[in-house]
Length: 165
Image (cartoon, rainbow, N blue to C red; front, side):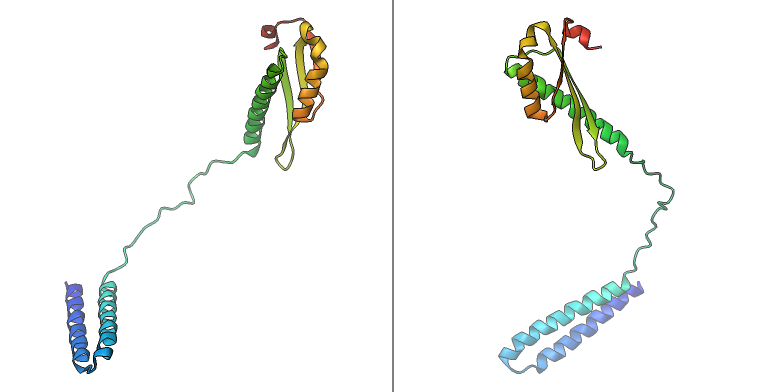
């Protein structure tokens, strides 16, 4: 209650001071400037007195030293990214070969992750059927153009269902 009384008392004294200053200003041009200044004085006094009476809330923050953060394992993420890259690259190469009318039984890629995090193709192995043997040069050309790696091409007599072990 004393806080409200203090704010009201400050407000009353400010009003009296602003009123006295306003009465003493004689000219019209000066009156506009002084009205602005006294308005600012009135607002700043009001805000200051209210702010002085308001107490800062006592906020308690929890102790965060006991919270366990999950460990970041870069190797696991790199392996996952490499596997996803190999899968998508395999699908893309298969699609490229199919667009050229070439059917392969299986495409297997071996990837390497450098210390800087770059992924590169280390080995590309293509399994084709006996009927596609005559397209070996074309397959090598397509694969080399897209991954800059000479593929190893193996001719098998097995069906593609047997290759997916």
